[in-house]
Amino acid sequence: MTDAREPQADVLSTLACFEIAALLGTLLVSAWAIPVLSPDHRLSPVPVIGGYLFIFLSQRIHGETFRDLGFRVDNFFKAAKLLVLLMLAATFVVLAIGWSAGSLRMPPTSGFGAPLLLPVESVAWALIQQYALQGFVNRRAELIWGRGLVSCLAVAIVFAVFHLPNVWLSVATFIGGLVWAAVYQRYPNLWALAISHSIMTFVLIATVPERALQGLRVGIRVWLP
Amino acid sequence: MNSPDEVKTRSARLTRLLVAKFAFDFLFLIAVVIAYGYSSLPPPYRGWTDVATAGAVSGWVCKADSIDSPVEVQLFVDNKFAGRTTTGLERADILDKYPAMGRTCGFRIEMPPLAAGEHSLRVFAVDLSGTRAGPTFRQVGQTVTWPGVEAK
Picture 1 (spheres, rainbow over the protein chains, first blue to last red):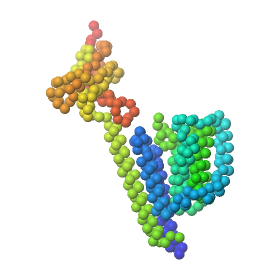
Picture 2 (cartoon, each protein chain N blue to C red):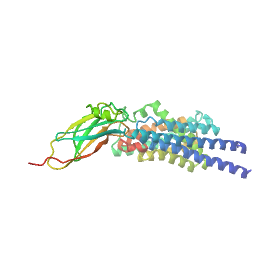
Picture 3 (tube, chains in turn purple, green):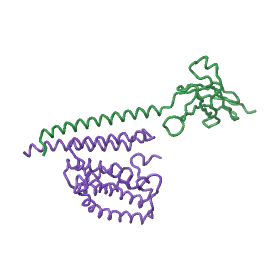
Picture 4 (cartoon, rainbow over the protein chains, first blue to last red):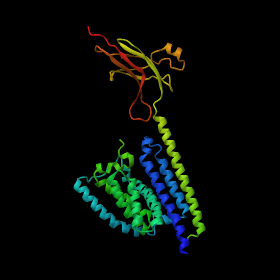
């Protein structure tokens, strides 16, 4: 029985590796190549939409329901309780950094980053990211390495790599990715993670020096005018 | 636990999905690269710098894809900017010889006073279209070596 299970697990975990690589490749192309080849941003949404379509179809093939992915409310407060303590600790650290750098401020109400401060837009954007990160990358990582530190690290690395070469953002997303992946594996709830993500984005924008954040740009856009 | 048949089916579908995705990404990237290359190429200009007198440089130039559109031309003397104008002069001689050219493709740029000795004169057509930041310069004809006026 055990011998019959192993090849199946191997096949699915190998395919899961390719799935994660496929998504990461799409995201890197959209961050590094498309802004150069299509400076007017007209083509930027195409690889992103293709990536999310790929995620959706993969989830259908794997037989994952919305509830499996974390669109549920029964474990919302359990996930939130776990997140609150961690968020308070992270906020304290980031506030200390902002205080010592003299960069504590009210974030701008217009310009780049301003929409991220509006609650609905902020949570919606965070949900879109968490849906891909936890609902896809984390679940595929679990297929490869099972639940635990290794799969959480894989999620964090994928999230951080996408935010390169913005160093501050990569560090923040690595830590955030690790925490959110661990909470998701314990209590899979995308709503709680999305709210946590949007709150921490606000904290980051309000504390870390603007020069370090580089307008929250990622990929080649960090260096483009 | 999934049966071997279910896993086999799932694996096959996932493999097809991955292949389709890679194919889409590859074709999309190729299409974008081609579109970028095509839009980045400066439009071909046709023209010549054919007369240089003591006071001016004359010639003709037009854009191959819009022959009646005025073209800005700039004169560089010894690689330094010396003047600019826009085409608009009638050149019936050019039209006779090259019927596909525009009627008003001629230009005449006044030359600044030059010191004694030889000077190189180059005329450029200036193109502001395309995706590059900044104008594209396309030399019109060949570099003209102006013998200059001997100092008296």
